[in-house]
View (cartoon, rainbow, N blue to C red):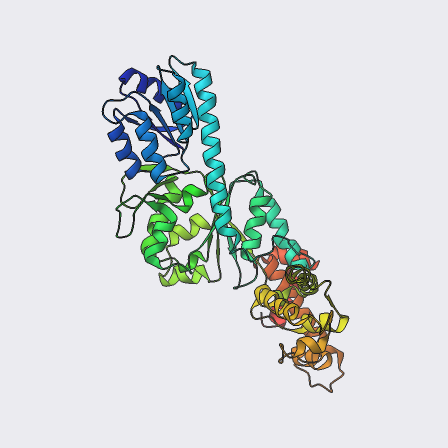
Length: 458
């Protein structure tokens, strides 16, 4: 929720302005003097300041000057009954957003407040986007040629239009953030921020302040008040990446925030209302963590309202070449290498590899190939990639190894059994281990599926 600081020595005027802000759905803080207003600014985060020019003690112009010395971004609306040209020029020179004369028209003031808050929101979003731009490594484009990924994105489309909390599960590097961004981009919050935070990459003592924010003096080094990611994501989506690695003490606080839709910054008792859609991800088996006591059961059920499994790359081999081609195109543009292309043999080699590092490993391999391409290769062949993938078997040996047959064994049964087993596993993964749904995907009866499961020891 937006917050406005109102500084005016007239009690009735403060109350009128606070009522106007309340009608706009905006929280307000009142101060009678410039000194009191500056103390509020030092202790709390505000999105807009409205100050009278004539104040006891420090006047409005000096208040504006001191605000600009510490915060060049927060908009300031100056109110005065003494509308001289000199006052207006001085206030605007110091960076006032607007200059309003008393007595004022309430509709005009309301319009000015709306514009100022919109400006502040745009500035906050731009700051966040600039910070994220340098660290953005995932393509926003989605590749879903395989049945497994098509099933995943069918679920994405089902949930995107709602505000339901989503838990995305999958191995490291499968593209869980890409799925989370797709949920955001396809939903009604697409015009607001998508804010991501990696719960595994930030030390536990810093993660709390990153999520919930803090006020000045809350801890050593807290020189200024800072809003947390929940507040930054207001109206948009907050993506809690690798939620399974969050410390248990912080899990309890997160649960309270999700249930009450309010946050308390570190060092403050003030509750801030938040409105952000929560999407989280994990590469862990959270059900096993719940059973072992490593993850709170109540938080698990609060996060896992809608479950989306993301298959590993080895289970979506139809996506390997389109993904690789997309990465090559991107890196060729970045490095100025012209056009880079994979030969059919190179594509087949990539499809045979097991990809333990999933999409992230494929991306890194394509970047390496693009780096080596100038003056050496514009068409990337199997030999150019094999040195980076030494464990990949040739096609015949690969089939034999996967089926359990010997390389010189030409019997059909082992290969067909292996293909059947892999197809059943993909269907089970796509259906979230729902046997009835898996049977429908396989176009067999449930009785037949149970027979096949027993046959293959699944």
